[in-house]
Length: 320
Image (tube, rainbow, N blue to C red; front, side, top):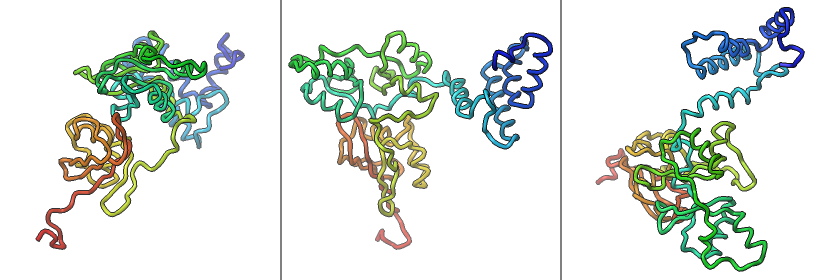
């Protein structure tokens, strides 16, 4: 609200109420009511969300979502709604799943570690010993650049450049994780499960994207189809594809029926293989589907091929 419209006397206050009632007043009046009604039983979060709903309904009745000057845009309303629900998420909800983690073994040569940074275009990378469940540190690209730019020989043990990562349990609230990162001045956290194994990682970008939506940068790959039927009953799939979406698109909800908490195809492959399956691995789903790993590395799966179950008894009598 402009300074000239701030309530100072009864006349300006009446004018303000009049102008607001016909121009986005629903949201303003609802928010102002939060502070006028001290006996309200409804939570502040619920009242704010109701105010947003009323404002959107009013905008729709007025013939569109184009905001008046000084009013909240649809993008701002969407972000505000996401902020209200941000505290409902925990670390497990926002984490990059284990199957998609880009990490490096502490025993690889310096050149291989640098090449991993270059290949994936990332700035921070977990370092593990022998297996991903034993994350012992984190490498930052600027510590690597310092040696590359100076022309000095890299340290014999590049692990001396590692930084200590932040470890958070799966159930820790996303808002608390953000506070932890700010306090520790780090942009990467390792999410651990109840057995202290690595469940995923969280970056500051992941937390911000929960509010503002997907942020694409110059290193992000161009989007490609996550699920393509290449022949009858066979699909090529991105391991990051949501399991529920895949099951819906292939027309078989049984594909998404699994006891473990799995969100993606890559996560499903990890559960079925009881580890990170390597390219060429063929996995059998309880529903009869065959999952073939076609691309990936020792830390994560990237592409898969799905084969629909072959009917045991068909109309063509192939079971003879």
